[in-house]
Length: 240
Image 1 (tube, rainbow, N blue to C red):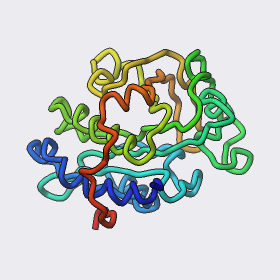
Image 2: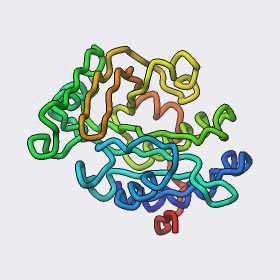
Image 3: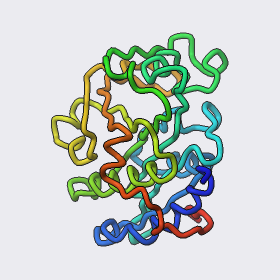
Image 4: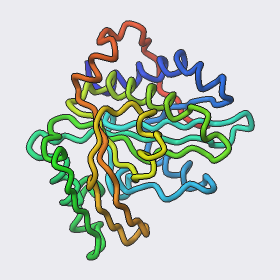
C-alpha cells in the first residue's frame, strides 16, 4: 500500500483514537498541506518560528511524505502543533543530511544564508539511514503544559508515522532541558545522545544545541500491531 493511501486511512484512525486528548479539552486535526500548516503556525501567538524543514517555500514535502497535527481547544484556538516528514536517506546518513543543510533546505545553495551552519557530533546519527521519520516543530500552549499531553501526542504521532511509512528509524532533535525535565521520556524515545544538532540558521534567527533522540523501526514494530485493519479509508481533513 502506498504512503498516500496510508495517509488517507490515518485520518480516520486519528478521529477514532484521540479520546485521551479530547478528555483534556483538546480536539485533534490532521493535515497534509504544509502551506496550510505554515499559515496556522504563523497565526499562533507565542509559538516560535516553524523550521524550514516544514516550510514548503524552503523544503517542499511530497504527497504522502509528511503530515501535521493541530490540537484546538473548546474555543477553536490552537493549543498544540506537531509535524513529521519522511527523509529518504538510503545513500546517506542523518548526520550528513544535517551537516549538508539538506535536512532544512531542498536546495541549500539557493536558500541557505552564507552563515548557516550545522554540526552533528552524535555518533549514532551516522548510523541512522534508510527511511527516516523526522518529528519536529512540537509546541504546546503554556496553559496545557504539564497535563500529560506530550505523552498522548507522542503515542499518536509515532503510531501515525509507523502506519504511513514503517520507517527504519524515527528521530527528533530536542534541547537538553527537555531531557532534564523528563519530557523526552514521555515522548517514548528509547535512545538519546548529545551533539545532535549544533545549528545556526540566520534568516530565522535560530541558534540550537540540541540532543538527538531516536527509536529504531524494530522498536516501533514491537509496540504497534502491524495489522492496520482498524484504519478505515476516508479523505484527509484539516482546520477549516
